[in-house]
Length: 178
Image (tube, rainbow, N blue to C red; front, top):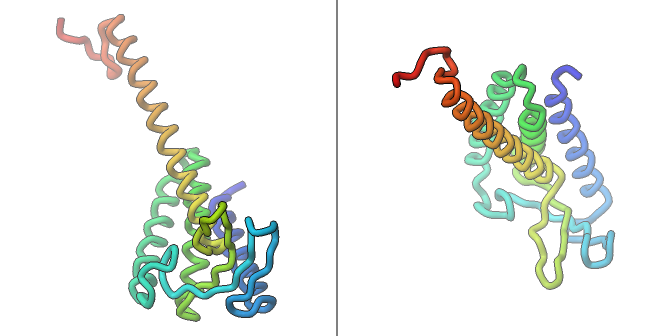
């Protein structure tokens, strides 16, 4: 599918938007609903900061940073659109959708709706939303692409060096000085 990475961004944006609207209309602020016992709980909160509620009340800073990041992502996606790097482009699409989703909330309302809460024993993971999930999964795909690309490039260069030593030529076809 052509420009699938933009469709991934749109998908994350729409699902994030709809889920936040559902939470706003069905849960009062700070209300909780257990989904899977105490492990997974929907908890309606508003976050005026960044991830894990850090840097509260820095709306303009977040909006500016997000604009720069979104422009950078779109530029990098356009640059790599013919690279065949599905993991990289998919990851960038997920990050783009999540970043735009949270950007819209911050720009319009000055805060982000967070509602996904997970508890591991006595540890309660900071509450987040689907845009944050898109960003995290996207970053994981980008890192996986970087690792696989690095491994492939290092593996290919090692095999090329061995082949070059055997036949006495460099990759460019020039003879080694012996």
